[in-house]
Length: 258
Image (cartoon, rainbow, N blue to C red; front, side):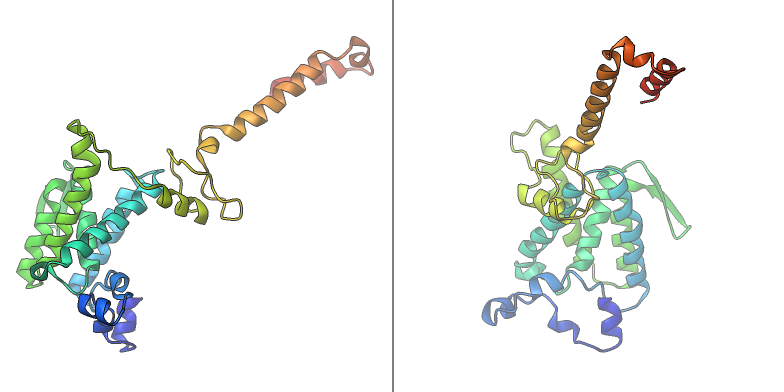
């Protein structure tokens, strides 16, 4: 949508670019957010970035981050914050960080699926571990700036190191998803989280289910109600069971299929 609006000349792209001078001097704080929503004008590189989001982003969401919506959201928040910090260094500054965020997705995917076979334009076949480097080489061949790709790979490696490599090495510092991210996901009722420390908001959507529901909390309640009904039926007097023909048979069938 941002690129389409730019194509229709509805706004100037530099009005949403990251400019720390404008942020601090004129309090144009929206630049800290809008710089992530522009992937460049319509072009072949723009199409490649959309494909990267659709393929590798969805693959992460359905694979390593399956039923971990809050962790998936936190990956993007951490990546965006890391890129803003890195871009504060003048030599590493880039006006639009959305491209870097896409490369971060590709880098995390390459570490989660290092042995997956990928095909680059039907010409080169290589392992998933080398995906970000292959994309970096393509940017170099096409004459695109390679700084966004390098920044995204740095942010992706920092995230993967803190969440996977460091804990596996026995590190004491545990980089966990903050509680406020869990609360946001639970409030908006989007996705699921196995280890969610909060319950879904009662007035929010019903897609998100808290931990007790995922572990069978409602099922336990239903089962307890069924067991109580069976217990009452089994302890009923023989006189009540003998009323009418086939009553005892119907009671047994109800207990078996309850």
